[in-house]
Amino acid sequence: MRGKFVTLEGCEGVGKSTQLNMLKNYLETTRQPAVFTREPGGTPEAEAIRKIILDIDLSVSARVEALLFVAARVSHIENLLLPSINEGKLVISDRYIDSSFAYQGFARELGLDYVKEINKYAIENCLPDCTVFIDMDPEFSWRRQKGSVVSGDRMEKESISFHKKVYLGYDAVAKLYPERIIRIVPDIDKTVTHNRIIQALKSKGMIQ
Image 1 (cartoon, rainbow, N blue to C red):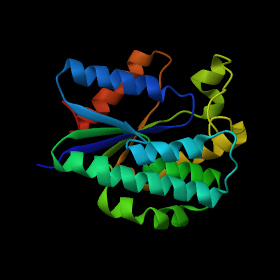
Image 2: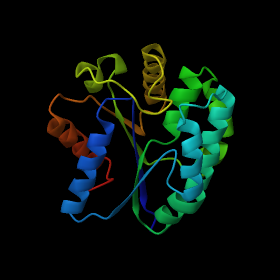
Image 3: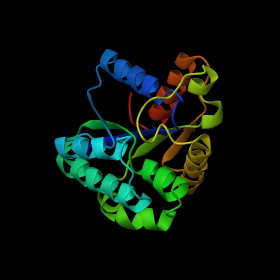
Image 4: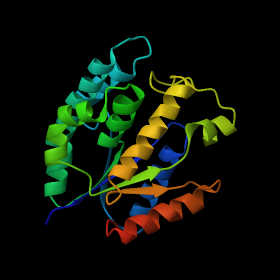
C-alpha cells in the first residue's frame, strides 16, 4: 500500500515551523506514525548542499541556486521520500517543489517553465498528494509584527520586496494546482491555525 506525501509551504516568518511542530505532536498523540523531513535537506548529501545554498557568505546566480535545489531534491526523493512512501508511510516535508516555483521561478524570475523543466524528475515521480500553503503576506508576517530582526540564512536575509515576490509566486502556484494545494489563512491564535490544518488534512484523507 502506497503511503501519503504531504508538504507545508509558506513565506518566511508566517509560523510554518510552529505549525509543523504542532502537527508532529498531534500525530504522535493520536498514534499516527509519520516521517518528518525538510528541503533542502533530508539526506546527508542534501544537507551538505543545504549548507551551500543558505550560506550568507556565498553569492550564487539564480540558475546555480535553482540547480542546487534540484540536486538536493533528487537525493531526497531517491533516498528518503520514495522509499518511505513505497513502504506505506506518511511523509511530511517542510518545503518541497512549490518553494522552487515561488523562490526561483517567481522571485528570482527564472520562470515557471524553466523550474518545471529542471524539476521534471520530481514532477513525474514524486509529487505531493497534498500541500498546505500558509497563506500570509510576508510584509504582515508574525515575525515582522513582533519586530524580530532576521539574522538567519541567505534566503531569510533577502529584502521584503523579494519576499513579496515569493508570496505572489505561491499565490500563482496555488491557483494553478487548487486540487493539491490547500490555502490556510493563519490566525493570531496558533491553535486556531493548527485546527484549520488538521481539518484540511482530514478532509483530504491524509490523516485521521
